[in-house]
Image (tube, rainbow over all chains, first blue to last red; front, side, top):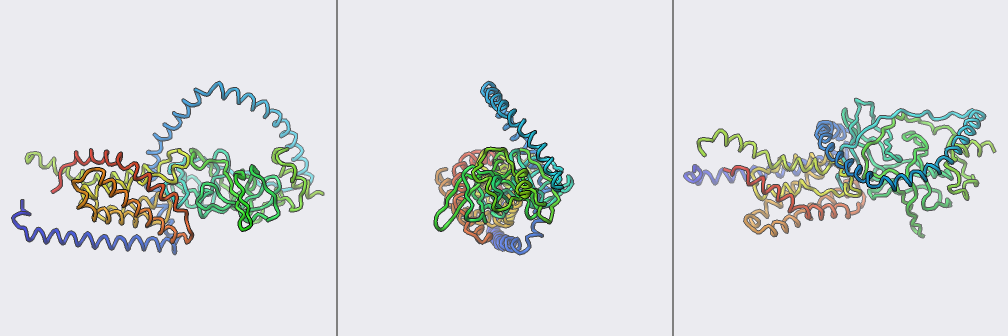
Length: 320
Length: 172
């Protein structure tokens, strides 16, 4: 009503408000650009800021992730119920097969122990771990990270390796008090020193925001096949050796490029619970165990005949 | 109406918070693990739909400052470069505001087309900014798949928001 009586003043007021909006718009655009530039220059400080804010939102995220988790496990249970008979049959067959492997494993273990004591080899101690739940998914086309519900309060620190149900999924890039952010293997910034499990050749697993990370720095003469298993090498000290990572899923070797892609054992998109290894990085490469000399030939035609004999093969090869 | 004015003031205050709150809720919803393989990299940008809808329906309740805050929230939670979504969402706000006079009172389909063009523009900006930030050529596929998904889910989002806006007391 008042607006109509005092039309001139009203218009001026609206115009002033409009001007204010425009001004604040320009200031905010500049602020966003400034934040982007600052993020490039002062990565550490921005990470502190981000971690603090993530901590703040953690309870909200945790709360909202619960019903979805429950729904998902509900679906899975119904699924399991209907497949019980079929699963039972498969599991029986598997058990039979695994019993044979179990006997072999026991024999190899005792043999392994014997060789180790003969060589006086230093083993890498098992590290304790913290179980965590994924409360925030990737949610962006540019970064591949997840949020987990443990932080410094629970003993999580930056750099710790994170393992899913079937293998390595990445490492902690920032740890707040309540939450931590995990950089997944497929992220643009992810680099993991790995080796081929059977032959022991070293390489680096690098993400490029594609679903499957790529294998780099593998010597050119190394012959690899689809299905070859990749484990962490332990070099660089961030990741302990021999964590399963994935298997070779595609080979694209031409004259100009040599692209080897790895399918991780743990599916990044179905992470429910994960383990954070409290691995205190060893600066020096972890002894000689697990590092096979380059000219080892026994494993070449071996393929998958024996279950992961690397820790056994290494001392044996050195003993030759 | 006049007798229930204090009551009305209260509800007016509450309803003024609704636009930003829905956008914040959508940010949270897009971060929560869905467990669908391949889905999370391209979760639809529900918050962009909310920003567009409210800028057209109630521009005064979705000012640049609110949009900036929502974008910053998305930046922090998604783990990407801080400022990327804030900048993109500001562009969405600006474009939506400039299209508003053509869209108010028009058929829903026109609004949808307007939204589609704005989201495509926003995806372009986000992709270029991310390429510059990381200093590599990133695959444009995920971001445009995300944009397409966002456009597809818009009617559902609009339906929710329309019913909310009908309930809200009128402005002025």
